[in-house]
Image 1 (cartoon, rainbow, N blue to C red):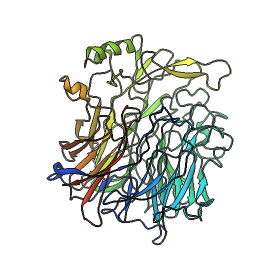
Image 2 (tube, helix red, strand yellow):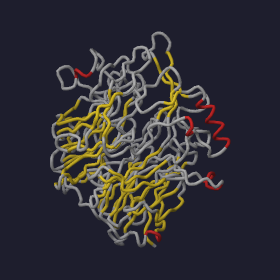
Image 3 (cartoon, one colour):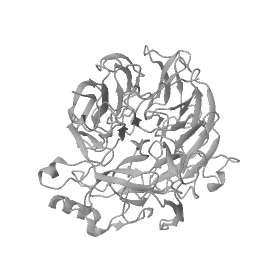
Image 4 (cartoon, rainbow, N blue to C red):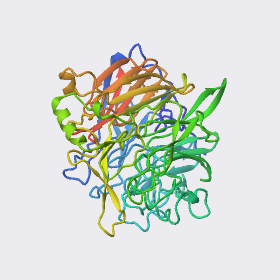
Length: 609
């Protein structure tokens, strides 16, 4: 049976704990001394790709683990590295030697998972190539008893018919006792492809224990939510993000994505379970316990992108175990952790029909009454940007002849501008949760999308596909990545989960060029999440302005900021050094990604000087 270190000194799991709270009880670094934080050391991965020589660009998105004085991190090229946590000195590295000539969305690995039975210690993680590795945490050598001499081929059983289509892992697996639970990213550009099934494997042998079919098969619950034959070999409906585990109740919480093709669904009529659903599974058997679908018949790429936060809230004077699922759409769904029932009423609200031939959009979508949406969900023509004359002119060309839609307006044959865009809202960095005040912290951006559907040639597997604006990419911004609506463009929001209200909300991020011109702080696109501590602090990088910041968790006042080598599109973590007793705060600064031309390979560790 797995025995995990206690929280506090260590950070043994990607989100700090199995519940995905991203919370630390450490308070050596606090409101009073955070201004004295200084860089203690830097580790360089020497892995950078700007896409000119290799098949893809790199994105350094790792969140390290800390166990017994050692940091474990994964690199963009899927190496696993162990560092001395006090000095950043490399102890060992394991290289799976992925094929870097094969195109992927980005070279990404967000982290690994730790398992121990009190004797053996293992690091388990997956690769872009679709293999799951078990590595001895002490030596960096493969665990010869796991699978085929230390790894298993995750493509077997889900991608056998599609050898040329993408399938792999960019997020760490979940661990429940002696079960390692895996999702994956899958190719979603065609209706058929690798399955997004969730699977549990024996952590010591690699033997397959169970499979949950994310697209139900005949006779399984949810099969009737698909039109006849539409679910056969349907691609996607996968969990590319991070799962959470309620160890006490034996549940794993799985955030699933939309079915393929994700922007047009005439060949998959119906609500399409378990697309875009939060699903609670029996972690030992893979059996469905409950599910909640957040988007019916998704045709906007509004995946569930973030790790569910397992929280406890006060309702009617009683403490209730709950799960908070944040979304690209800007909603928070707060559900009873045991039953899946909403803790705030959710209305099935009528939404527009599609005018595209063959498409049958859902008639209603679930809208929570509380909390309020934390991201922009529409705009009007008169809200067009005026931050610079050049940006105004560029964006006027983008909106010329376009239709401004509301949330859940289907993309049509005429160009449609919608909020949020395909990256949200919020994305994989997820939210952090403070158990002391029962506050959820969410960073978000307001970058819209501009799309229209166009007819494909006769015989194509998809009759219609999306096309972005000719004057820009599919994202609603200008050449400088200034969003085309009036700012603010990014926020950090603190949500009282007991009441479903905002405690505070501040603008997050800026553009240096606009600041120099006297334009007030605008907010900025951001990827990556936050860390909340008992020291009264909220740490976050995420923004594309190459800064790492700390806020007062109670009121949102910024207390500290430092410039870093590149934007930190990653989640920070913290731990106490076993030798020095000092609290370290660590974040990966890789830049690049979708929002930066500056790349770096730096893992940064800060301490109070």
